[in-house]
Amino acid sequence: MKILAIIPARGGSKGIPRKNILEIAGKPLIAHSILTALKVKLIDKLIVSTDDEEISDISKHYGADVPFLRPKDYAKDDSPGYLTALHAISEFPSYSDILLLQPTSPLRNIEDIEGIIKLRQKSKAKSAVSVTYSWSHPEWCYTLNKNSMNLTSFLKKKDIFHNRQNLDSTYIPNGALYFCNSKWLQSSKKFIGEDTKAFIMPPERSIDIDSHLDWFFAEKLLEREFK
Image 1 (cartoon, one colour):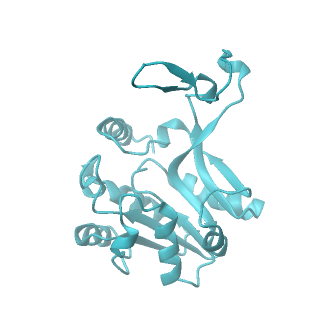
Image 2 (cartoon, one colour):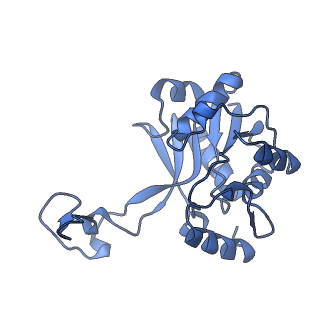
Image 3 (cartoon, rainbow, N blue to C red):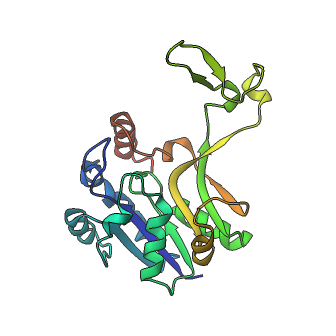
């Protein structure tokens, strides 16, 4: 297993402009992911994939390799994450496995990265993704008609209210880690399939920064050294 780790970082983030290089807990956001990944000996090569010169310069300053500027076609608002990985694979075809680490998950630690790698090594699965417990169970979710303000059960069935302890636990991808076989990704064009294993991470390390509220909580946790 020869692992290429990728940190994808667009320059055109919308919710929090330029968030990938804004300072959080004393360092640019992207630096937290770079410095953590560089300590993982199971990773053979770490690169940052960006379309932005400033992000490139900052990433290099913190020790990451930035071998190219990502083509604009791979850096649009609606570009799926797997396209970034596929582009990196085309540039580095000798790597058998690809590990994608989003810079918006600064609380993932060394043990998380090593854990998902070892999970796939042991299980021989084609892919593995990090997940966390979902507090909003689908049984309790509704869609809203904004004209009438009526609620409709998301599961499209008669409302049945259960105590939490009687419901099966549900999990959602937390965005921190996507790890898969390179050839499998090239053929499937997705990170999650029938042969995907879940690597469970706790809520305090599962914040995926998309809003100012996410930023606030992540900064407080980083400052208290919950990593």
